[in-house]
Image (tube, rainbow, N blue to C red; front, side, top):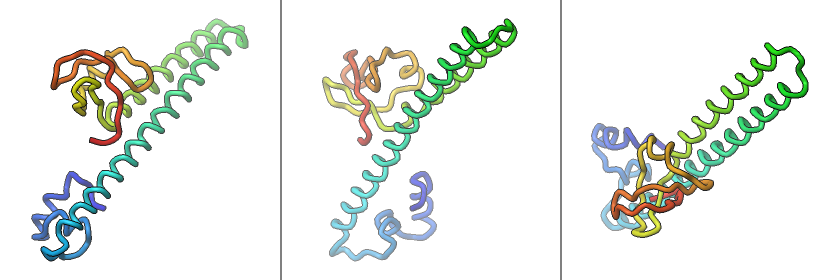
Amino acid sequence: MPDTSIMLELCTILKINVNELLSGERLNMENYKEIAEKNLLQLQEQEELNNKMLLSLETIIGFSCSISFMVLVFAACFAVENVFWKIFMLIAGAAIFMVGICYAVKLEHDAGYYECPNCHTRYVPSMKTVVFAPHIWRSRKMRCPHCGRKSYHKKVLTK
């Protein structure tokens, strides 16, 4: 399956349409609509699967960097006597935590869409909005770009 960003250019070069590219064969007009719907469903399923994988990776990274941080802080406080090593372990733990959380938030931003509970518009907010929005798990309190109301918008996998 070619990357979606190059599909239109590839279709132009091959002088075929997107449905023929996705199905791998020349289509006649009799079954064109049926195959087009099948291809759209397949693309939607692929997008949902990719977004699930990104969100799973985000969860794994978030938990592992949090646990690493706690282990290093615990070790710095109770297991190490040397002040230099205590400071080093605290700084290393904080660095691991910050990098991991930043990467996890980036993955959450890139996977799927947010849905407004009021007007049910699905959209991708800016990274700045996602970072600074108060959140509960994968719901973030943001202003809807469509209706303008501020509420907790839930993460959804497909448009």
